[in-house]
Length: 345
Image (cartoon, rainbow, N blue to C red; front, side):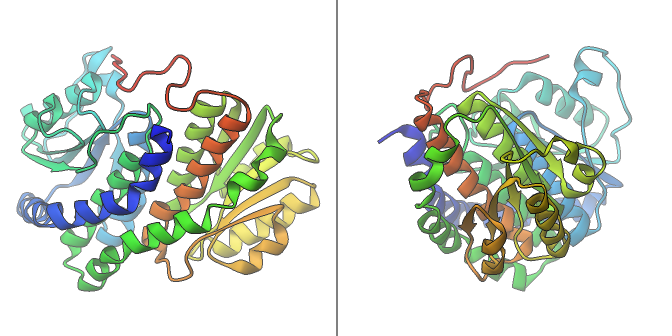
């Protein structure tokens, strides 16, 4: 079995272990955050971890009423500037915990008196050791260069923190159901390998989401780029209507991430427009009615809470990207030109 196949399949157990072993840590961190009373949250991350940060922008803003900004590491590294982060909760997210530029943002914030938290998959990493608090992903080693289980674990870690901050027992109960929902999603996504051959020769495509699943559009897009070596652009449904929709020509493939929730009717309306333009619509949703508007429909579990939907919605995208890469004859565990740990300044 390929490493990436095994790691995609491990996601239910990874999430189950994370919930079992780190819920207490999330509660302690939440207590510290309430005591510190930050004016805002700043998150530093790169690549896939940055997509998890986008999820945090929506979740912590909606559920916890906290303003969340994404850091610009180059301000700290290339330009040696020091934005005032003294009243921030500074969160650094990195799978390896070795990202030097993300670490620099965390270090600068801590020196100014900010409350600092890092989320990594390595408790012994430099980032894990530098912060006031560390939340471990408990994923075990991730061998494949393209991240899968560490990404969904990052989403769950953020969701755990949000639920702990709000002291929401209903949210905690929904979190406990996630491992089974992820396992269901894996089963529901199995047919992707049977039809992905249709897209063997595509050279470009787009992925569209909204709200919580804006992050999902980014993450599916980066997986397709990393594994398939094609141009794949990601958009918010709203931004896509403001010009980029002009790229749609007959046969242009578009993945539409549309689980039920606040943006659902907007996504349904966009699908109707895409079909008018004769796009190839590949739809990820828990509403079977959307199957009529899809060339291929990738179902999600029917009882999926909107706030947790990105954990499951990304999985059909992971499987699509992996199978399309294999169909194209690419090496998926070691994509060309990529390494597991990337050092940037």
